[in-house]
Each structure stands twice: as structure tokens, then as C-alpha cells.
Length: 391
Image 1: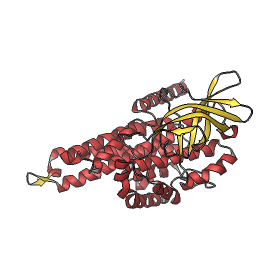
Image 2: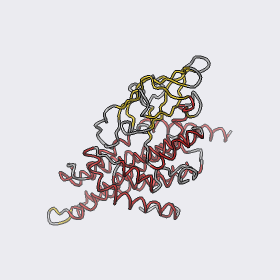
Image 3: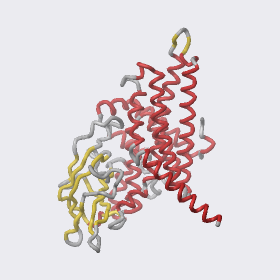
Image 4: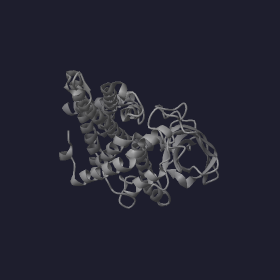
């Protein structure tokens, strides 16, 4: 299914440009990025050069783009590499966080390098004992004097932690009543006391430099607080719908790559004197695969439009898109592998990598179970509002 009728000419032009970049420059290196966790700073810088790392930032700093455009970029990048797609949305999220909640000084100091790809930013919220329950943070930031905080603690699963130059760290500070509240800080990884572990040997989206991080008596200027003390968790969750829509689009890109490969194989592979596409069982598989991808794509476009318009139904739309698309992406990749048979069960076949990359989409930005909780909560709120309007 084509969604061209739903897109503006500018969005279609962007998709065409990103598709050419992805398939010409990223595609030939995708297997190396995956198998050897190969270095690719130049590709990251190229994304900055063509405007992909500042896509949602205002024109003062970036491209002034929209969420539909961001989702289209994610699908096209993921079609060739889930890892490269994930790095792009990371830059978008961290750049937006700094732009929305940082001082003018912080924006001027960091945004140009993030948007250009000169420096890589990441986000450190998750801890060994605090995953879905982000309120259970143990990392602390203690105020010493009037203008310096000392951060101590450990973070887990920091995307690009081993490769990042700048980290947004959420740590617990003390409020005026002596309580513990989460606060977001901007930290440079070159500062004394910041340590990244060895890159995780992940199942999928490899080559990102995902790692644990530790902070040992790290001195951070009070001016590097993003937002206000105590707002760290709320501000972190405020951008999560962007990530969920991007993840949905990434899932579609991975599934589409697997579908295209399986479709081509079914037409070329002959058994019993005819292409396997001629067998009803294969036709049914491909029909279901195409239908799920089309539905997932429409869901992410709808959610992106909700964000662009500021609609009140964004949380539900974003979670529905991520839930359906993430599950559909994995299922489509699994079916593609079955169509290939033994030929799909090898790392020389891109379907195998697509399946590994797709599985993480069911985990990050909130697991599939978390998405169902969000959707049910939003449904209950909508029902209460509707019931109130009837009385």
C-alpha cells in the first residue's frame, strides 16, 4: 500500500532523499555494523550533514520538521539498518530535550554539535534495579555549595553509552522539604568520574555502543540542570511518545525489508516445477504479512499526525502504533524466515538481522505490556469523559 495521498510533497521528497542515502551509503555497511559492531562515525556525521539529526528542532537550530517526516525517516533507515535508525532517533530526542528544557547557554554550547553529528548525545535513565519502574532510581546528585552538584550512581542499557560525548543523566536530588526528587543533568563523558562499560553484546541493533555507565563523584555545574529540580522524570516521559512513534516506524521498515526479500524469493525459488509463490500456503503468508505492514504504517502515520496537531489522543495513538507495529514487525520477519526455510536461517541473509533488530522494538520505549497498560488507561479516561458529557 502507498501512503502518498496522506503525505505532503515535502514529506515525499524527504522520503525519496533518505531512501537514496540509506540504500546507497548505509546499506553496504549494515552487515559489518551488525556483525563486527563496526565503527561508523562518518555515517552519523553524514546524517547531520543532510539534516536528519535536527529534523524536529526549530529552524534556529535544525530543520523545523514534523513528526510524520521523522517517522518516514525512521522507516527508510530501518529498512537497511535498525542500528542506524536507532541512532538517528536518539539524536532527535536528546536534541529536543535540550532545546525544550535547557538554558540558552546550554543550547548554544551543545545543539550545533548534536545537529551536525560532530558529537553524539545519549540518555541515562534506566538503572540495574529501575527499568519500567523509573521512579526507583538510586543515582544521586548532591548540592555542594551554591553552584555544583556531585553525581554518584550507576546506569544500565545506555544506548550509545560507550560512544556518546554528552549524556542526559536523571539523578535524585533533595528538595526543600528534604525529600528525594528526580532531576535531569547534562553531563559530558570526558569529565572526571564518568565511566562507560564495554559495549553490550546485544542480540540485535548492534554497533550502537550500548553499555552500562558509572558516575563517581562527578562534578556538574548547577547551570547544567535541564528544566527544574524535581522535573527530571516528568520531562523524560514527556518525549516518550516521539520515541514510541519512531519505534513503530522502525518496526515497519524492518518488516518491509523482510517482506520484500521473502516476496522476491517466493517468485524465484522453484519447487516441484514451479515458483513457491504458486502454493496457496505461501500466498496466504505473504497476504497476511502485507496486510499487517499496511495497517502498522497507517497507525504510525495517524499517531504522528496526532503529535503534529497537538491532539489530546496522542498517548493512546502512540502506544497503539508501537504495540501493533512492534508485534507485526517481529511476526512478519518470522514469516519471512519460514518462507526462506534453511536459506533464511543464516546471517548472510538480511532477514535474520531484521528479525533480531525487530525484537528490541517490543522492549524499548516501554514494553508491549506497558503499551497495553497505557492504552487501557487512556480508554478509561475517554470513557469517563464521554459518560460525563452524557449526564
